Amino acid sequence: MKIIDWYILKKFLKSYVFVIFVIELVSVIIHITEQNENYIKHQLTAKQITDYYLDYIPYIANMIAPITTFITVVFMTAQLSQHSEIIAMLSSGVSFRRIMRPYMMGAAIIGLITFVLGGWIIPNGNKDRVAFELQYMKTPYHNNERNIHIKIGPNTLLYLQSYNVNNNVGYKPTLETIVDGKMIEKLEASRMEWQPKTEKWRFRNWKKRVLEGMKEEFSYGKSLDTTLQIEPKYFASDYSRFETLTLNELNEYIEELRMRGADNIEVYEIEKYIRFSSPFAALLLTFIGLGVAARKARGGAGFQIALGFLLAFIYIIFFQLSRTSAERGNIDPLLAIWIPNIIFSVIGVIIYRTVPR
Image (cartoon, rainbow, N blue to C red; front, side):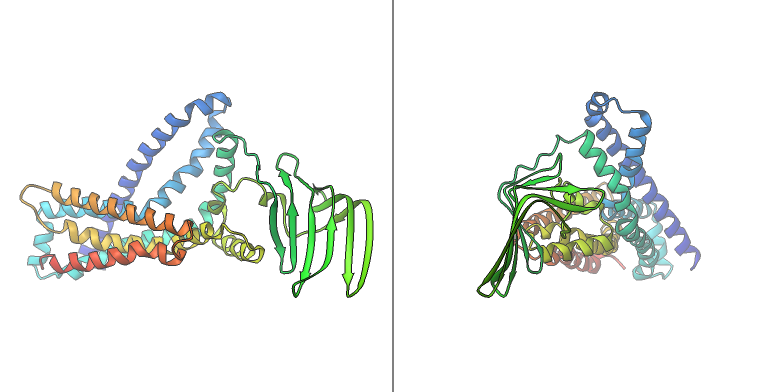
């Protein structure tokens, strides 16, 4: 790397740290102001609040990394342009493509860090963050769903009239085993209770029918413990659950949801694709931001900065619209997450062709 590379790269990374610090500071102050009544209501200690924000800060920083990178590039490059440093580089024979190199290296470093953090490290912190929010910021969760149908195995279906999350009890459960369209086993009970020591479900006042051709075997009893491929956490609040899963856990959970025939799988698929697309978005927005801010304007850097914020705002709108459409099942999740990047790749090429060489 040459001196110019180190100069731009260090300036880029330092500017990024400064921008992320400012945004985080504002975000934390606003969040504390909004949640202060909850902290007082629950009489939380300074340590509890501090521990929460130690998880909250990296979560927010990683989530806004692509947009923060874009803002950093626009501010930094606009300053270089106004100081005629970009013009000096071009006049000395350095091509615009060559100037891009340290920018893209910086974006690649940020993208790699966000991918590792978002894939494996931050989700573990989110487990404590989400648990804190559920306990102290959200209203108590009650599972009001009635007539619950769940596929818990390739051939096994579970029906519940209702489920109580406070004591982990399901009422009027029916367990059916169906092979080739025929029911071969059916278990009915008045209730099913989770046994944390054995990690099994206890069926109370149960009746069981086993069908084999024209034969039928009938049995019954007061108590029966059995292992099912479902745990109480599947009936609990799913608030931000996708944010608490590492990339490996997310893949496993998606496969489990598919096996169970769940209908909320899109949320988890979207989270998975976001974690892969975010590093690319940092590179793409760096490319666009450099093209926007590389020109020297007579009136100062205000126009470039305003244009940069406008493009960032448009990108966020595209991202939110496509994500919402995917969550509703209108668009394939993979396509939805990449639509903003595809559109802005075209915008980036157009901007690049208009940049003075």
